[in-house]
Length: 584
Image (cartoon, rainbow, N blue to C red; front, side):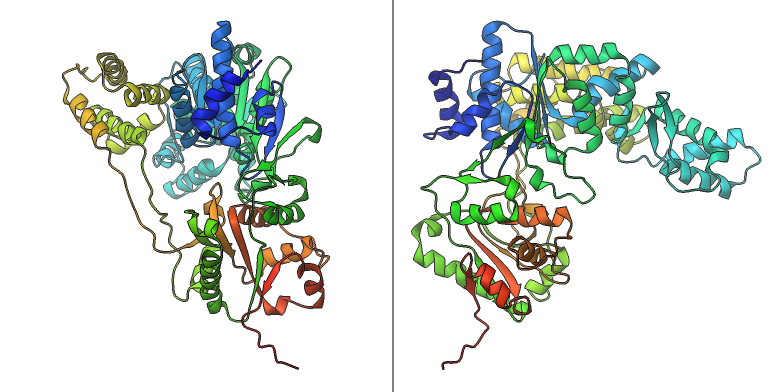
C-alpha cells in the first residue's frame, strides 16, 4: 500500500491538527504483514490505528477491492472513535463487507448465531452472565429422568450442573463436561448432567463464555473458516493484552495464516487483570511503537529500569520532572506533603501550571484510601461521566422495542435479555451512526423503521410506520442529548481504574505488604528478591507511565537504608520532610 503525502496530510489534519506522525507511527501505518505491535504508553497507538484504517479503506476503495477489514476492539468507545475519524475523512462508517466491534460481537455474529441457525434453526438467543431460570430447568430435567429423586437432591445436582463447565473435547471434537465442583459422584451422573446442560444451551440460553465454545464448534467445519478468511483479509486486534486467552487462540487459529494480515496491537506490560496471563510474544514477530509523546526522558529512563523490555524512547524537546521518593513516618502526613509539592511545582513551572490534566493519588487496594485520608472511604464514581449520543439513542430505541415486545413475553427483564443478545444489534449501531451524522432524513427514518419492524415481527408484534412518535422523540434527543455529569470530590483512585488515562502528576502509596516498594527496590538492585506477581510489576509500570510531568512514590522511612541511598539518590529526588537533621 503506497501512501503519499497528500494522504498523510488528510489524516494528520483530522487527527493531529497541526501535528505530524513520527517515523515509528508512519512505519506502523504502512506495515502490511502479520505482526504483534507492542505500543508503549503515550505512543499514539489509537491515533495511528485510526489513520491506518482510514488510509487502508481509501486504498481498497480506489482498487474496487472486495477484501474486508475486521477491527476487534476492547470497548465500544474505540468503535465510536474510529467511525468518527472515518466520517470526517469522507469515507463514512465501517459497514459491509467490513466489521468493527468487540471480540464477542464478532464471534457471536459470524459464528454463534450462524451455528444455532444452521444446527438448531434457532434465531432468538439470550446471552448474559447467567440465567436465573437455569436451575429450575435442570431440576425439571432431572425430575423426568429420575422421578424417584427427592427435591433436595435434585436441587443439589442442579447446582452442580450449573457450576460445571462445558468444553470441546479435542480428542473426538465433541462437547464434554468438566468436574468443576470436584464431586465424587460426578462420573455416575455425568451423562445426564451433560445432556441437561446441552439441552439448555440448545434453547438459546447462553453465557458470554459460550461465545468462544460454540464458535470453536462452528469452526470445526473448514468451509466456515475458509469463508471468514476470504472475507476478512485484514484483521486488527486492539488492546490484545486485555483479550482473554480463548478469544486470542480462536483469532490466531482463524487468521494467523499466510494470506491474511493479522496485527495485534497493545502493550503486554499493561496486563493488570488478576488471573489473566501475560500474553506470550514471539520477539521475531514484534514491531515496537515506542516513541512516547506523553513525557520526557526524566520519566522514561525509570520506566525502562522498571520494565526494560518496553524500551521507551522520547522526544529530546519533551521535558518532565525528576521523579520523587517521598519518605514518611506517618501515613496521614503523605497527602498534605503531596499537595505542597504540587503547589511548589506550579509556582516554579508555567507549563506544569498550565497543564489541565488531573493530579491523582493511586492505590493498590481500595481500602488504602482511608489510610491516605483518615476515615475517607474509596469512591467508585469518576469525574464527569458522560454518556455518548450514540448510547443515549441506542438506549431509547432499545426501551421502545422491549416495551412493544413485552406484551408477548413473560416479563420485561426477559425481553431485555432477549434483545441485549440479539444478533442484529450491530445493525442498529450502524443506523444510529448514520442518524447522528446525517440527521433523521427520510432515508435514515426508513432504515430505522425497517429495522424495528423486523425485530417486532420476530415476536409477532404489529409494525410501526414513519408517523410513529418515536421519530419525533428521537429528533428531540438529537437536539438535547442528556449527560450524566457526576462530580467526584475525591482524588484517590486504584491503579486499575486509571489505565489508559493521562495525568499531570501521580502519587503512589504502598502500604501493608508493600508489593510495589518491593518491586521498585528489586528493579534498582537494592535487594535480590525478584519473586513477585507480574500483575503488581505491571501495575507499577502503569502507574508511572500515566504522568506527563511528575511522579511521586511514597516510601516508609523503615525501607530506607544506606544501600537504598546508594542506588536511588542520584536517580530520584529524595524528599524527607519528616526527618529532623541536626547541625554538626
